[in-house]
Length: 261
Image (tube, rainbow, N blue to C red; front, side, top):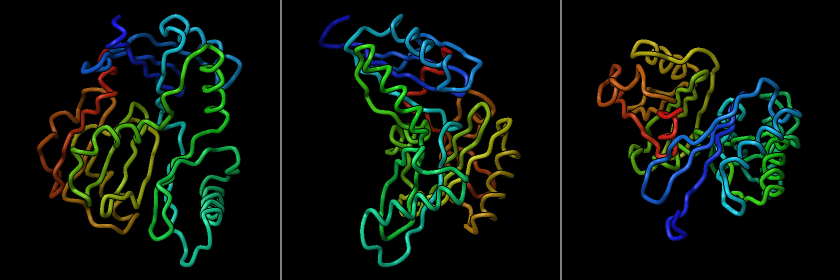
């Protein structure tokens, strides 16, 4: 491999699998290797499996970006009160909101957010132990971290230029979950995630949209930006309408690996 066009590496942390993808500049990601495990993530089974995968396929000194499965992430919205005095107050309010919603202590989670004092904002919480374990294993093996983010955040960043409607909604349909987010002026103002069999077809997606529209007390959007784990039932919806909602199928660059898995 040329030093002027080196391979790049991306590790996806699933609930029961680790998947590695590689690419060179201006080429799509391609599947490299995967390892399954049956134990809970960050158990004694996780670390040796992670080292096994990286040592077999990633040269020392290389950078590895990390994608975290949405099902390992907690997504929620914080609406700050008026007259906050400091950023510390904002973090305290976020921690209390997290405890109320999930019953967990915020100290055990790392909060990634588009912090804002004057409007609602999205928070993505990653298990602190998970992040510490992965970063520790990368450092121990002589690899560099290229950042760690939830899968839907990676998709949003990859496809931001295509999501031109600032009031549009975003949907991520995974193998065992669906995440839905509503935007206002380009900022996420409502989010929900449900686990279970993926929605397949227009009728199932319509039901999800209607349910969340009622729950959020928000009108349906004119655009729905849709990403799915693999090619499937939603492919045919691109450019179509579900009632008055136009569907735009996103093809995030980092997910090209999935068609090879």
